[in-house]
Length: 355
Ligand SMILES: C[S@@+](CC[C@H](N)C(=O)[O-])C[C@H]1O[C@@H](n2cnc3c(N)ncnc32)[C@H](O)[C@@H]1O
Image (cartoon, rainbow, N blue to C red; front, side, top):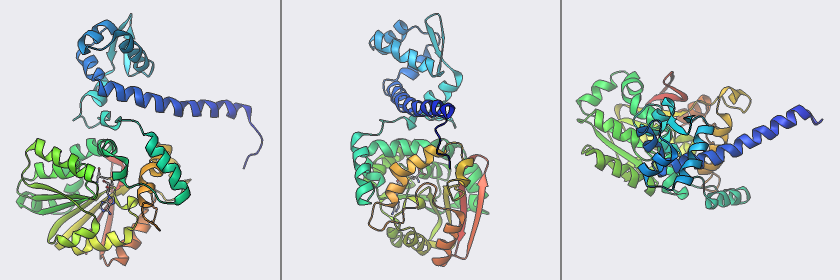
């Protein structure tokens, strides 16, 4: 390991650190643009000046102008002679919520002082925060991170890879999404398969409120959300498809959860699990392009959740390797685990688990 100060690398490190600060500040700038509907207004007014955009939004021109300069400096908008237009890519990602690459929802309210204080405290006590403890804003941004893929690929590509499942769902099956969060996946499946019954379960009250609102908006009558944890799967039986999307690494007691999953399945039922495609250790994981984001998310959310009870397993975002999952499922008495990856979802590895 190096100990001598390298002046070139020193400059690079200062730049890197300011890039992190820039990310924090620009997250707030994008959040303001979403919240004040400035991106939508700009998308509707290609070539608008700051005066025209202020007029269209009813906002103060000087503030709108500085915001435009910030988003143009970040190359989200183009600028010519005082006229601004979003780039086509910024339009798609920030103003079209149903676009597969939509990420606007990720820019909810920035992380609060309360969350930072609570996380600093967790370094002393060892006890982290549940997803629910962060508040409603977190469940919205968490759902937004996976929503594009879940709306676009989950039904036609990912679930269709389970032999016979599309036919079973079309004919009418019982589906449970455990750890459903804000209910995007459960809603997508209920809408695609009206003859099936879909139940979403999550311990977070914020998540269930958000999921229920989504189901009500869509008028889905074959979809129900319940507050509950893996242990509550004991109250459900005959499940044809149990889904668990990016949850296992968040659990303080993953072994107990995997045992509970086994109890609710119908004969020939499938437990279909997605979890982050970790390679195991830090160095092996360097192939992941957004690795600092993943470990940072883990510290603030996933590992924190997995440490939210005394003696929590603390797997975290990058902690559920294929071999760890294999050990957990074997210990719970599952007979087979078939893992697969999809080009449409480079972040996750999927497991088809059967008794
Ligand atoms: C990363 S989020 C994933 C949400 C959703 N599946 C998705 O793909 O957007 C993890 C979810 O697991 C839930 N969770 C935490 N502990 C749980 C438990 N013991 N049983 C079931 N869900 C749990 C959290 O409340 C949170 O909503």
